[in-house]
Image (cartoon, rainbow, N blue to C red; front, side, top):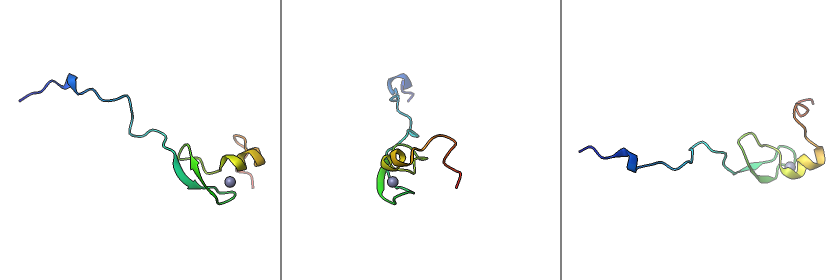
Length: 59
Ligand SMILES: [Zn+2]
């Protein structure tokens, strides 16, 4: 029995969307909700440290 697949339209929602997950900040070790997998610094530390692109790897 072939069903009409056009009926089962998937939602415009990908499985690999940026999820907000609880992560530990690398700076203050406090748990915060990161907006994306690469987010490792909490917003508070970002403000204090003034994190900018290409300026965070220099120790
Ligand atoms: Zn922090």
